[in-house]
Image (cartoon, rainbow, N blue to C red):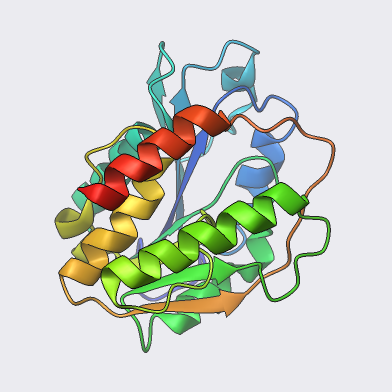
Length: 222
């Protein structure tokens, strides 16, 4: 992507919280498919900051306190907007989202304003409780937005950067990702999905189920 005729065409926002083992590798691999990476440190205390590559194509935004994934995404999106990028991709720092699928997401923006990964076509190693919760939340949000939303919990997404200013989340937690889909639907933006693999290892999820469910209900009823 570095040979693109349009500078800063594609930007990746990668929020991270205590991802010392993977943050450097995910950034370096992502740079093979984008022009810029905005890494947002959400209060890591495990030395993750020392792993950020020293590159002019990597912007670091850092917070001492853990503010939540939604907050980190919002700050990354605001930075991408300020850099006048054309497309913005979001992916997690733990390798659940393979960077090599970024071109597939970007390609989908030819027909859509937002493109998200869909893991439910091939759930693979996804835990059964995550499959169930994802299908339920996707059904409820589809009803609310009157739009077919296949995988509302997948954070691997691509956006036309210009629309981000109209769909930025107000919530700071994981519910922000659902909120952004609702905001996109309210603005009549087209939302599409592309198949990606479901990758789950032995990593411990940072998503606190009760807090996340409560946040989702607030978003759904808002």
